[in-house]
Amino acid sequence: MILRAFALMALLPAIRVGFVPTGQGSTAVRRDANSTSKKLLRLAWPHDVASATATVSSRKVTVNGTFLQVFTSKLTKREVFRVELGDARSMWWHYGIAAEGDFNGDGAPDYYWYGGDDTSDIMYVFLSHEGEYRRLDVYESLLGEWRRRFPARVPLDISADNDQVDRLYLVREPSGLALDGMIVRDSLTTRPRRYPIHVAEGDFVFSNDRESAKGVKVK
Image 1 (cartoon, one colour):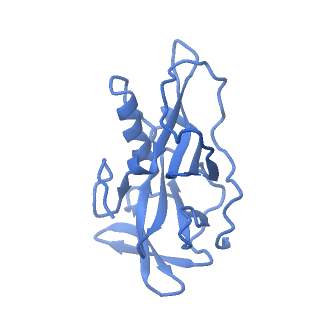
Image 2 (cartoon, helix red, strand yellow):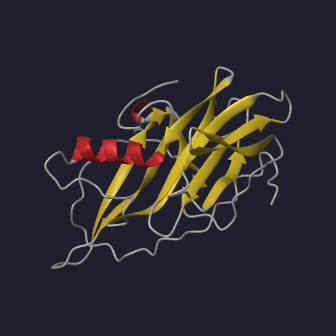
């Protein structure tokens, strides 16, 4: 399905089922003081993903046994970004661009890319920056904020679905972009606990396929 450029602002449907708040586990969340944020995009499992949009097209290539989805600008015919899909043993089966729009307000299109299967998933937001694209690793950004706020708690385990991300949005604030949502942690003995989480743009984790996504910020 071809997505129209800059027609993003309709929110994607939710996949996670919300839980009744328990009031437990809440700590101070950093946000812009006395300001309201604008929800740009809901980051959730998308029903529809695309291999091409109004501004980019893609092709699947193999490099040393690894499958890549390589995106090319329809205007300049140059590669703009690529995503690793897996290999012959294990590869995302539901992947592609889920939304396109000018998220950071610089006049250039940005992209929400999703990859997943029946056991795990990954979310990237490709943001234009000085004529190139930086890849925002959504899960790594959440993990970094969790470690900062709760250094003594059990680490998050989002990819295995032991911890759920509920109502996660990319938002715009006066100071820039941010991720805003809720972590829902299941418990065998008590009701699920909900932890508000907010990641300011300055704490985003940017990565590419040639660098580790573990806390490395690269352009």
